Image 1: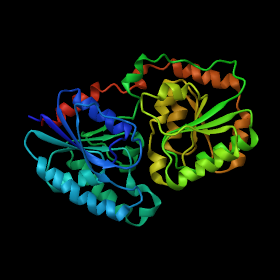
Image 2 (image 1 turned 180 degrees about the vertical axis):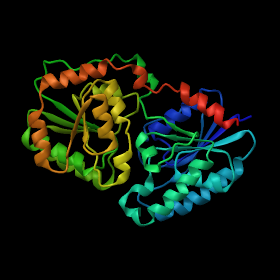
Image 3 (image 1 turned 45 degrees about the vertical axis):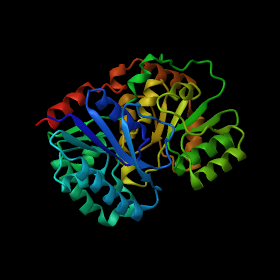
Image 4 (image 1 turned 90 degrees about the horizontal axis):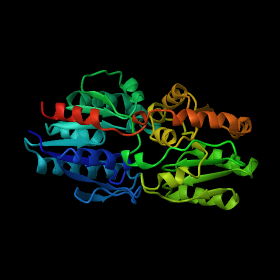
Length: 362
């Protein structure tokens, strides 16, 4: 009988990982976490009862060192913790790969397909083949987007689609729709800042819509932080607020946003198949969302009627979109979001918990 979970985490302070680990801890399992600091989301914390083992700090761009060190670290962690009462929880391809090679029981969570980025296009086919074997060998595979299942073309019994919905800790916060007395629109990006399309959108607001504003909330490091600083210094209606705690700070953030901007670049397949948690945050706080057209996220926005899909590849397109916005339509979308059932927006782990118990104890 499994009584202990060993979590293998690429980025220790990633909110999604903390949410998942906390949920399993609340089921009564002993939980030990092993992973890396990555200089992102470091303001987010685990429940104090959970043991956190920091393997080291690794730069996102240090690919070779990251792979070599990761192999050594993960092999040691798996070898040191194996047992009949243990199941490993792999938050990523490399973590699952080590568990499979060691012949250990593991759960595999997929929220990012690292080889679906352009830099690995030449070897994508073999990595995808390996990945499908990792899914087959896993006791349970959790995918955070239906787009991932389309990508793999798999419908195994052990695959469960669990979108990255908002934390149940938000349930005490009232959901307030937009009103029709707005004098100006507040656009906001919330998350890890890295997309050219987001900067393009902010520049359009800065250049052409001085009465409106654009707010950045989230992590920005290195050259991205320099880019943020330049655009903030150039336009008085663009503000950078820095990193935030998730979910503690979300109410304050979304109370200062009227439209959520999530127009991610679509030059990689990974962005085209993902379903980011910004969708569920915007739904919970009743804020219309604007996303890039032609991707899985756009399909979901259209299905839910919760926002707009645009071609954000040029400033002209973005300007035309902002010019076309009507307050009455924004308010209508916001009220539609308020009418959605919270169970469709908030992370209610009941079905996931049942699946975990069913599969890990086979």
